[in-house]
Amino acid sequence: MSSTGPTIIPRWEWRTFGESFGEAEARIRSHGEPKPRSSAETYVVSLDSPNNTKIRDGLMDIKKLENVNADGLEQWNPVLKAGFPLPAAALRQVFAAWAVKAPPPAREAYTLEELLGEVVAPNRRLRAVAVVKERFGFTVDGCIVEVANLTFDGQKVRTAAVEHEDPALVIATVRALGLDRLENVNYVKALKRFLGGPAS
Image 1 (spheres, rainbow, N blue to C red):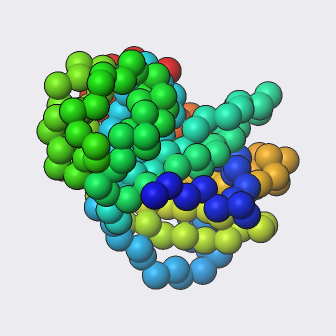
Image 2 (image 1 turned 30 degrees about the horizontal axis):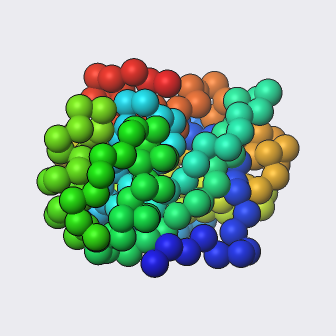
């Protein structure tokens, strides 16, 4: 069953990837000592779509890229959280997010293993990437700010991000932290670069 939740408000996000964020990270960490949160996820990257699709905690999670404003901030809207086995109707929604033509379903519902093995693996426009995260969350000027240690299929990388429903607050916080000196790159673009595919 899918669930979007009536109280969910799309958030505006600024994010970057790299090995170190210099003085900006020091400024972020000056806002407290959070406990790390860890997760193991599988991102399914479509070479034809900017949307974020991943599997975490047994759920297929889709965030649609709704808008990009003049400051380059991106608005992400959660449009699906669906458990496995994934019904064929939900799978059609997933294919729409991937911007890939959906084949006739071979099953009424798909387990995670069947989705990855029978749907994702044979499609040359789709790639599955194992992503492990160790996330450190902060609150800075009302925004959610994150620094995280990651691996993409075992390769180490780091990310920093600022999120809030108000884009003006996001860009002000990004600038105050000094993160605006770094490139704004979302997860999908970062994963496409990792895979050697198109970054848009």
